[in-house]
Length: 318
Image (cartoon, rainbow, N blue to C red; front, side, top):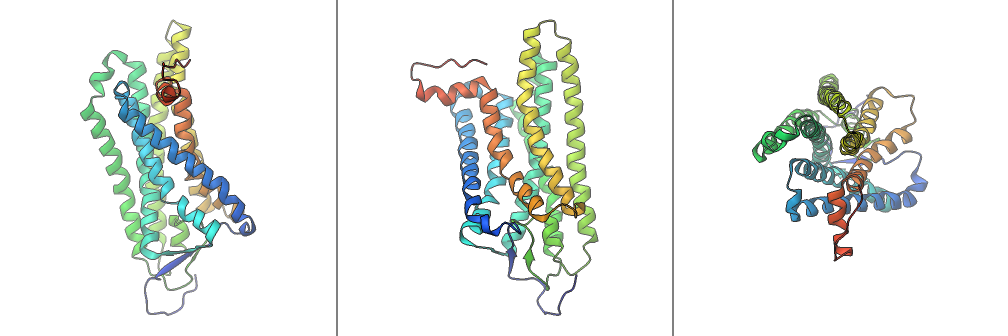
């Protein structure tokens, strides 16, 4: 790209363009975005509160669900308030350091969430394929170690990415063609050689998503084989039901993530407003739907959520 010869190496602010071509609809678009964000906040905070309060839910499955809820809160809260500020108040500017921090939270915690989804697949595998050893395999210390491993791997892989971005020279245009500080959207503004950033970003994302999806697929192949071997039809249906919510969450997370990641690099034929709108929904829709899916599919959570409305007790059918 063409860069001028300004003496400064970094701009004090970047300008987030928003969604090009849809500027006239910003005011009205903000309402569904705000509604989905509030649902995401309420739903995930409810999951955290219910699991903490109800001792019968102090089980590995629900601990992993709490990790997922906390990550979803971070993911949507690091992006959606700024998107709403752009839509409602035309607040397009974001400080350079704030932009780098936002990028770190988006990509780092997305990688951590991928690891947690893998851990949840392992949890389902143990629960179905080795139910008698479930509590002895997934002890509190093991769960803590798995959570720490997912966190260290995700943050460890994405920290170099944000460091590389912050060290690039930016003394040309400072307008980011996006609603938030997505890695490649920022890197494209740099005046130096961005090849290492490009290679590292693709490698890190492919490693995280590729390895996690492979292990998740293996887990569910083993689960499917175990379930099909059950003699009782009712037992098979119950086993499929316990996995159905997790499969939905996996598809909701990975499908838009992969689309956004690869179209940012190679999807030049896709209109910018479509790509950016889908990227915005990626950081909002999964955090909104995850607690709804688990709330609908998990009897224990439904009962605890509905208990205040039914003081004499409520029995929720599975």
